[in-house]
Image (tube, rainbow, N blue to C red):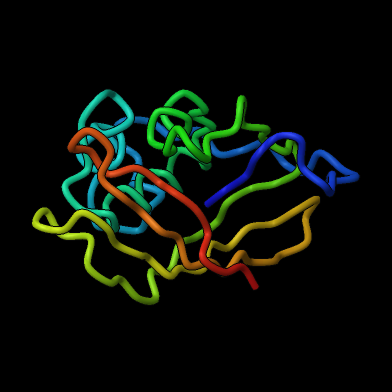
Length: 148
């Protein structure tokens, strides 16, 4: 996912408040685990073992608005100076559609996904194929291969 600042399109409304995610909350990435045991441990400094795990944790970082994690897991060649969270956007679900390579034994990988959200109360989704690479041994987001 590649929300950079500045965004070309801004929401016209603020929408409802984002749900508060606690350590015990279900993880926003959709896996059957508590946030603290899933993506929360990566946000706290852990490393993703696969590019799919990194994709899920980056989606969750958008949900909880963890800009530091998003920037830390973005390849330095494509990393923006900041992440802009649109106050009218609420992420509501993640579907992993396909993963290629990206295991602990690979150096590159892709994850095709659909991330659902509402923008100023209107439902929509982002369909993207993200490319990941190893940077100093850790998975990082490199770029979107295509966006619908």
